[in-house]
Image (cartoon, rainbow, N blue to C red):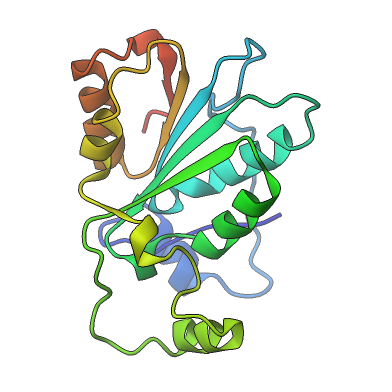
Length: 190
């Protein structure tokens, strides 16, 4: 099992999981409560992931890769800066292997913060690249909900949204305002 947890200020449980979990701790894993699945209608899929909201989509993408004829998937993934884009190195690798996948990386600022991140720098140097994910020219600068909605209404698509509660609400509101039918949108309510 993989757990993808990012500590966020005011997060319900993320701080406790990241800071207080010790080897030997026991976690109780219950049945999934989400509804994030891809139907078999053959419709193209639009995924909108904010931060670690990408984690469930990663598992869905890997499951789709096993299908004989997976649908086209357009994945909008967003965060504050390029360095913050969650698992962008993994997305670049998936793009090389999955011809039906298109990734649209969205950042609020194309400039990384001016602070030293030893792990990031070590990985970047090991790869021999200026970046461990997307190149600057691949990035779209803006608010994730606004960028997704700028593509128009997704009337023939299955749309999945995952991220923080505020991001999910803003994205769903924006999608509905641009004409995406509510019945086409799937998200896990908080």
